[in-house]
Image (tube, rainbow, N blue to C red; front, side):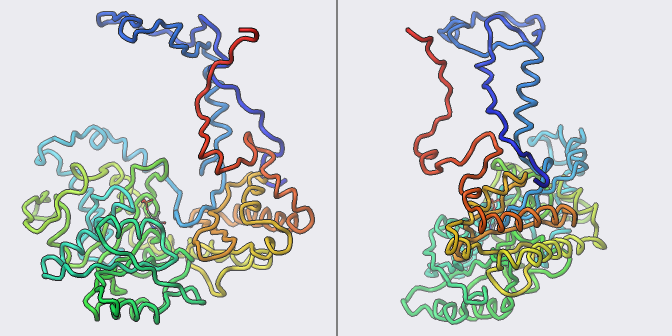
Length: 499
Ligand SMILES: *Cc1c(COP(=O)(O)O)cnc(C)c1O
């Protein structure tokens, strides 16, 4: 089989099972503080705590072997869609560890951190230029947090204008779940706008929702561009004009900005504000819940409400401005995730103005390459070139061979690849959402496409291979519902027989 493991990895023993009383893996230095009697402090003896006791090599091998059965971007290709880039250049880690950055204290007087302000302001200015917005704030800690902050600003803007009766936020049915959640969190009623047969926003439905015939007035439209269908919205200017004509605001979900960096700018398309995910498009680590940065871009009319502190130029100096009477206040502690900004700064400067567009060109080229190579076995949901990701449907295998998108994904594990995103966006039946990203080689994409084509042939000739997959991983197919309902995550020492 190409690119992968072929036999099931034996289930690793837990470190508790490897434990033998009295074994020691390291020498602890002599205690230089008053000793505390552990059993008194905890009310348990050491033996009763039942901690694993292993020798040094057993310990080393245990964790090294566990790390080998993990799958990550450093072990293989990762086609998950709607998460954009998964590339975390090592040089970012080197700069984020510079003593001058890593050892800063958040309470340090601002006069002592001009270099940190230089980084924050540098990222802000570069992102302004990339997005076409007048202001950037780096405070929000995740994409969803950036979305919510934008909606809070829109709300403050309408309140200041005496238009707080606007109570509806429109969200297309292809949107990421965080969009309606952010709107609801800000107290808005969410209305779903359908997608038309070409994968675009249904303009007739939008017109109707904007007319507010039910007496409810629209505050904003949240639009993802390119959409989660991997498609650029061709009517974007028209849509922004339609919303503005009834006095509404347009928010851009910019999590997919790697399809556009250096090529086109949401600020020029008519959006009033947007969020970016530095932990997607701008190469900072992603996953495990963060730390992320959901930077937001704003046009001038929303700037008075932006969160404090605002890092801005005052004469020759950079200052943190807290004196903003209309500000919604703080949305994060201190300056946000400062070391994320150092990483994003490193990445932005590494590409520079002249190479920024390469990012979007390669991400779009790679996705269209995969789409073209797979189109005969897995038809695209829409018949036009895609942006940074391609959305394919496995519907015919379900109808003819009882093979579902999930079966294809599970079989991919046997071929040594991480599966793509399944069943999202919700509006595409048997959906497989593949995002190769801008950083993969043609050879890697070919290995992946060869595996997908081979799996689609298996789906026809021997569907049970797919139903039973994965067969080479430590854990086989789980009953996912049961796994959630009956969490079994704690090891209990087996009782000796006869006790
Ligand atoms: C990832 C993503 C988000 C949310 O970002 P988080 O940092 O995960 O909160 C929102 N919209 C789209 C399209 C995304 O891909």
